[in-house]
Length: 292
Picture: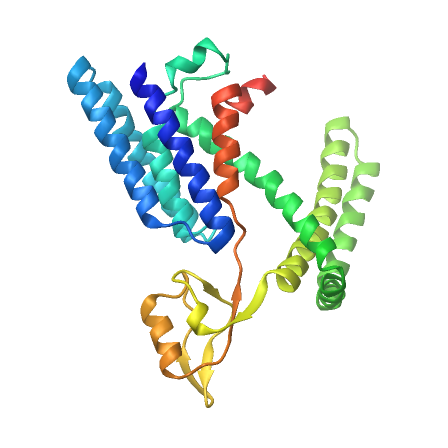
């Protein structure tokens, strides 16, 4: 269908622009996501009226509702920012249904789920790989700062590491003593995972502290930036660290008190994962289906 092709081109055009903007400015303009949502609904309503196919619109309405909840869950659990949340909702409207035209070129493994759920799964998988590569690259790029923070975290976690090491040894001893291959594998795996997650957490926190914490002037703050600590002026608390990023009112307050610098935590530029995840979903479908 021509309408599918228009939605496909429009969706990828906006995703690429959003990724470029996020990389250059660490911000996704709200008008991009809102324009995509309005355009997606308008085109789907038009198609439904012309072809008397109400499902083409109602499916988008349902998926928008689902991903409004999913996006806000990701935002309020601090998994990603507001820009990513709005972009996810826009994607759920544009790609509410799989573009039938592409079936002439690809044979994706689709399922009974709404297609945006397949896209969301691929975005998370692409994001996990992308994030892992990013933290490895950051630790190598800022090797000196990273090693300094890594040593600090090793020192600060000395007692927890001892406890986990003892617990892991106990699990391994139990695996040796107890009968049954399933029990042995479970206990050995648990012991190994405890150690892996401990040192992975230390590694990620060290990268975060050494590479993603920066001092900037309040004049360069953007709405939604994450402060790392409360702000004081002459030993008086003037701004408690906002739970969901600074607001315009907070930025005005910091400027009013002429605060020179504040420390913020830079977020990971996640929008490239939207482009990659959507592309993989369109070509291959749901990755889970390849496991069974």
